[in-house]
Image (cartoon, rainbow, N blue to C red):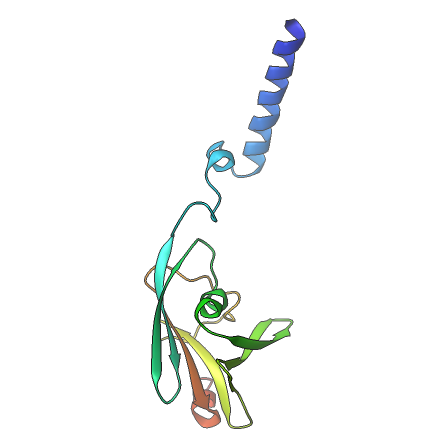
Length: 139
């Protein structure tokens, strides 16, 4: 009986130490994972070419703009050290004079789409722009 109590005490201590190491409380250990936690937010995904197509997307926590786009469109991209560069959406690929750029709530983010975490209520626009217009955002 003393051995069993000792095992319970050691197990409890290890659980407490693990919880402290992982963020300071036991809540994180027993909270549902993001995949089972349900919807964390909703965002609007816009694909803007000559016409604008709009999609309402529900997502879990830590969903990136790239992942949200990939839920509603066929996306082609190139992987670089800094992140993914979108080179095509729904078969419309960039060329020498047109590029895909993405915006969040009307602003050009400093992160690539695969690093930007979407927040509830965000409007994420992927725009097919001519090179002159695209370069204008960097001057």
